[in-house]
Image (cartoon, rainbow, N blue to C red; front, top):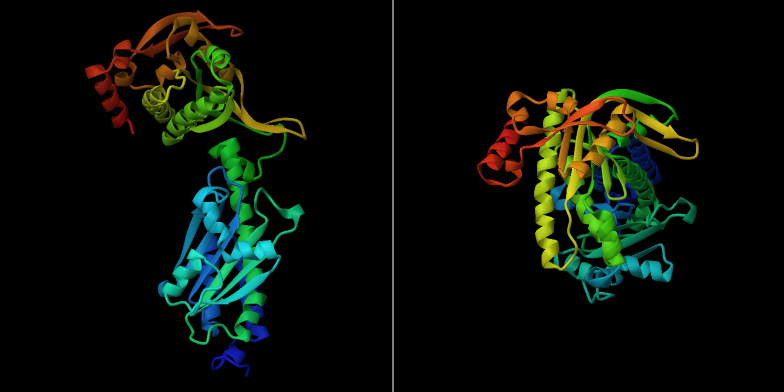
Length: 433
C-alpha cells in the first residue's frame, strides 16, 4: 500500500470503482440531472468508496446578463446536501482582488492543471479562501482547472474550476489525488453540459420571452409554422422620446431606455404577461391566459404597476438631475398568429395579424388624443361591469390602414389624480386575481 493510504482505500478506489462513478455521471448527465444532484451524487459515491472528502466546490463561468457564473458547493456536514451558487462579476474592485488571490488564478497564470496545498501550516499564498478553509479544520486542499477549447467556449465559459478538501490528518494520499484526477473531468463535463442547457434556456427567455422561448426550445423552429391564438396585446412607448434623444446627453439615452424598459418588463412579467419585442423605446407583449377576461385584468394590473414604477423612476431620476418621461400604453384583444417569421438565416418568433396592426394604430392614437392609456372595444368588452365602469369613451376613430372605425376607451381621469377613485381602482384590480 502506498505511503499515507488509508485502510481499504487501495481496494475501494480501484479502476473498476472509478469507472462505475464515471458511468453514473454520464448516465445522470444524459438524463438531465441538475448540477446540485450531480455534485451530491458524485461526492456521496466518492466518500462511500474511501475518498475522504470534507468539502467540494465546482463552478463554471456562463453567459448571463446578471451573473458571471454558477456552481455547486458541497460539505460533509450536510452529508447528502449540496448548494447551488450564482456569483457576480469578478473583473473589477474587491471581487477582482479576491479572485487574483485564489489558487485558481495562480493555476491560470502558471498554465498548470491542478495543485495540492497543505492547510495545516503556513499557507502557501495569501488567500482568504484558503485561510477560511484552514480555520474550519480542513487539512489538505486540491484545486483543478479544466480548460475548454476556444471553439467550444460561449461567453466567458472557458474553464471548469473545482477544489476539494479533506480533514484527514495525513491529507490526501497519492491514491486519492490520482482518483480525483481521473474522476473530476467526468464531473466537469457533466457540469458543463448542465450549464449549456441553462445558457440555452436563459438566452431563449431573455431574448424571446418566456412563452416564445419555451416554444422554440421545444422544437417550434420551422419557418412559417405559427399557431393561431386569442390574446391580449400590449403596445407601449415613451412620451416625447424623440425630443429627449435630440436634447439629452447621448450617454444618458441607454440608461434612460434601460430604466423605463425595466419598469415595463417587470410590471408585465409580474402580471403573467410575456414580452415579445423591444422596438427602440417601445414594448410589445401579450397576455395569453386560458380565460380572456383573466388576461385582460392581468394587463390592467401590469399597466397600473407600470405607472407606479414610472412615478418612482421620476422621483429618483429627478433627484439625480437626469431626464424623465412617461409612457403611452395601448391594450387590445384579438386573434393573431404566434410563430416563426423570416428567412432561413434569420427568424423572429412573434405575433402577426390584423389585431397586431390595430394595437399599433391604437398606440399612435394616444398622442392624438393625449391619453396615456387607450383600450379597444374588444378589450373593454372582456371586463366585468365593475371594471368597465372605470373607463370612459374618448370617441370613435378611423385608424390608419384599418378598414373599420374603432371606439376607444381610457381610464376615468379621476383615477390618475389619486384619492378615493384611485384607491377604489386599486382594490378592484386586487380583487380580480
